[in-house]
Image (cartoon, rainbow, N blue to C red; front, side, top):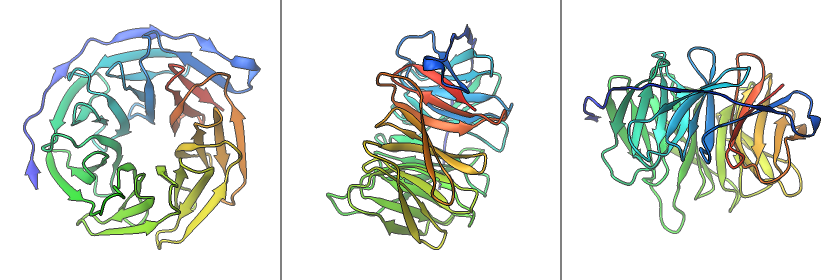
Length: 319
């Protein structure tokens, strides 16, 4: 176990933006809000402690919040070119996020106060992030092939994922399971991993080249995941039983989240927002033309599904 330093505390003056609402093709229930900063690249989104939606801007290096009416408020991350990626609400009432390029874990108050925790290994590449049942912050180190655990007072523990080349794990998404363990995807080695709070690792094999990425806890108590390398989404029981569901031709499921009793996913291959019931019924909704790069998504307090359109430089709301 390693105790990190005091970190960096910076109070920022946020820029306030009112984004335009765009409803392409008259898609019922869809609102899209454009970011004023060009090429910001929003990637992940979460329900914040203030019950508003918060998201990361990877290229612009910002954390931002969007209101249901489309008003967007942005906060620059203190570290330049940090590449903020995934984001989650912590049990302390703050936002926690990964800095993929900055090699740090960031904490931000809803008022805009930042604190950053550098990781000890220089090429860790923190990616997915979640909160465990132990109230610690857990994250995947995509480049470092480790799972990290950071307590709210800055104590860091890292767990290496053993591997033999050429199958490098490249952990991507992480989520707290109903069994008290942390579950994660191994995009590079086509596995689902499970790690106990004490660091005991178990891995479950998927078909080769499935490239699992997003993972979420479903309303049925199973872990649901996307197979970015195939046209499928899947579920795994806490005991390790895997079930796969085909989505459709040309699909490439990316990220996944639970909302309204079902699982919702972004489809990178078809520019669609997908929904799969726990019984396996799949439906998809187009969200506009051109390459939009649908990425992270999350359920909002308003009952809508919110998602990021990275290439289109927008965040969107669907209900």
